Image (cartoon, rainbow, N blue to C red; front, top):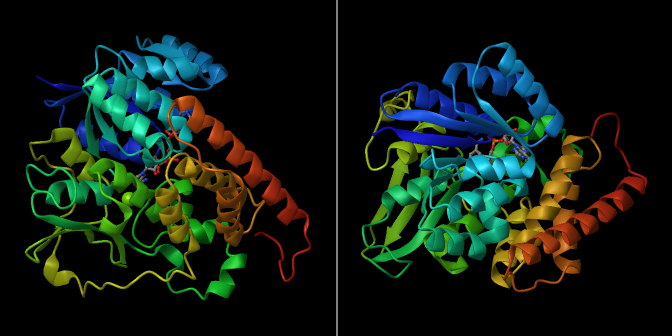
Length: 403
Ligand code: NAD
Ligand code: MG
């Protein structure tokens, strides 16, 4: 039987890669629903191509425009709107698989709805797990859902773990090693980072991604969020998760075993590989990705990350160790600061400073409900905004033009 897929975040980078893989296998997959924020043109084009029974846009006016457009084109897709519309398509009885690729905290509610409805969840939206880790894992257990990682590192680890794995020190596993490219500023002098531009930060050397995760890669907050993601996905404490810099992004992550073996998953840096692995699991299918030519790779190198250049990584470990709502606080401050940086309203180095400020000022609480996690998220956003406003008002030395 075909897998019927609901794609949350259909118009983004992961969404487009997913549709590319699905289009290669019409015998295996069918698109049941497509959801996004407000891009009417892109979603209308995807509806015309994949003919899902349902679509959803968060923005109500955009949903009206999509409905009118599809009707005029004779496309019988039912259009839903708002947060309720997203939750509806995430829990549709007609879909068995939900690929969660909304960016940021906005992805949490619909992905939780998919977990409660017992779906096979293919998770790209790492922020959902960072904010709502324990609640999300509980919803997966109680809803009878299955969780498969799409984030390339976590998908690599998933592929390298043994059957019967139940946390580090089970099934012979000792540690998880997450690789990180180091992004575009891996060799930039730390004192130059204050004046880098959004376009420089988004020019990732190996991966083509949405702008928010590209900035996260440049600060290495992305790796910090991934350490927290790995904690929840693989039940690993922070001291069993190590980050290693690997500039070529060919080794996607590794698992170290008690006997000294280290297993790795390699491939071109192309998200269609982990997407296809998760979509077809346990089968393997063509993802349209070029074959890895080992002889053509000049070399693979590894380094320890530089804590002074990448303070966000230590902040993420600190938030994970503090537990409770601390990761939600970190994530919210980061979302605010990255959005401000992308809009030209904050410096690159303000991102780590705003996150540190929020962790300092917003006390961690037990994350025992969605309301508690979202309240911590809201408090952190307010602290980060106030902090960035103060920074923006302060005179800046040597800052000319775009920043
Ligand atoms: P993107 O910015 O390219 O796309 C984001 C998608 O989310 C779009 O479809 C947009 O319409 C939708 N969206 C944004 N805000 C929304 C809201 N409030 N409600 C509903 N929909 C909303 O982002 P991306 O690069 O595709 O990343 C998506 C997620 O996958 C992120 O969590 C990211 O960390 C994760 N991820 C991405 C990559 C990658 O290579 N791009 C790799 C690993 C993990
Ligand atoms: Mg990743």
